[in-house]
Length: 203
Image (tube, rainbow, N blue to C red; front, side, top):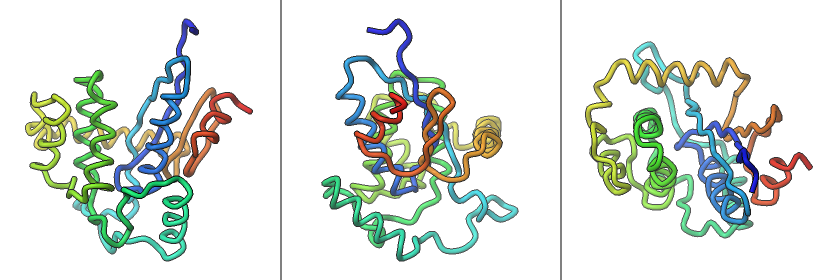
């Protein structure tokens, strides 16, 4: 086993269907490896350009027809039968889900990976509204984190830190998600298990 585990940086947004599908691939890929793969998750505000002066999303939150067709194609190709279709999944603002994830990553890092998966499942498989504070507290509690989660919604400092993460992503050239970075190389869009393996190995 390598003394320094391989790290892959992942920019993602829970509202993104391709992030959900890539999360499944990344989870499967990690299980195929003999050596650990460290996931350096970074939040990204997919709808940042659609926010008004109050920070609320202005306009529809649906997907163009060609995007829906691509989602359905990937669902079929990768046996994602449990994934809700774009027209049935709740159309949500994921900013508070990102806030909770960012808080737990910083304060309960051992629980973060499970929490990350639980948020994707809650939205894309169970159809739960992960913009709702009560739902987010329940999801965090389900992975063993109760401490101060509800308080973070009113924490202006944490919200500012999250906004800085969004700005950093843009500054680093990220314009869409999922985006993966490893050893200075970048790949954007859905990656299968084989794609992730080739990307990490630089093949």
